Image 1: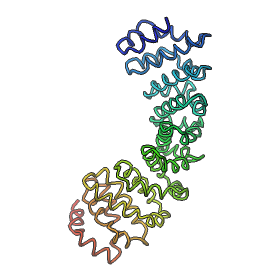
Image 2: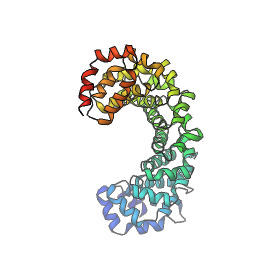
Image 3: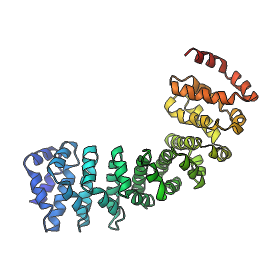
Image 4: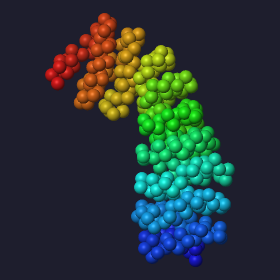
Length: 364
């Protein structure tokens, strides 16, 4: 009977009927059965039912999530896997993700990351944690429950998907000012820097995004350079893949906000990368903003203003000064003002048409 129910639960057209006909209370009872195979089939049915949006809410309302969390710790690896996937499906909605955390699911998921029972369990646990981490309200819980340490270790997993999910979780936690340090300390920053050299291009791109979020902090900005992340970021900033290149330049732009990084950035030729990327994406304001922002950050250093002018940094800033975005205009004009302190830059600014831009700006 359980095997038949399991087969029926795979049919999307019958899942709603399964819920309406009091199928869930029966499954709930079987989750506590002394028979391992019955528990496994119960977890499998819940995994099937939660795979569709229409029945997720019914499962969450009618089923005790504590039982599902307990099934993650079942002696049967198959039962653990199905229970975790059911929780993963539910975690795609914020209300259910919060309920899972309240039911103690984070501890079980963290333990599963260090399981030796197969990579599939680790993948499922990481995907679940990723779903949960997409909600800002979860970040504090992830930090407090010491989940991040296990996630950081997963960045070294031999499995590509595990590494990707781990970096995405760290990326989400690092985008929150309140939990950014929890994503960087304890080896998180080093793990992201090492991932810049991963054999998988997608993993490298995720590492760039993760470090860009981490680099919204002055201390981390210098640490990324100290830990050797700069050469890899520079290499990725000139690759043919536009997404990877833009992600690397976004991180480099944040690093340029720290004046202590300016010398190594200039030595690595980052200015040329910003200038070249700005020329390629000149028609796409959103994509080019981070490139020009990098140039603007460099202009805070009076010792390299001449090199910025000679290196082609003026034209992208002038282009940004004509933007419809008032904040972008102010940023560009502020950088241009600093560049204009030098005589050789004054001549370049006039040649590039700064006078008309300033006249128009005075009318705003």
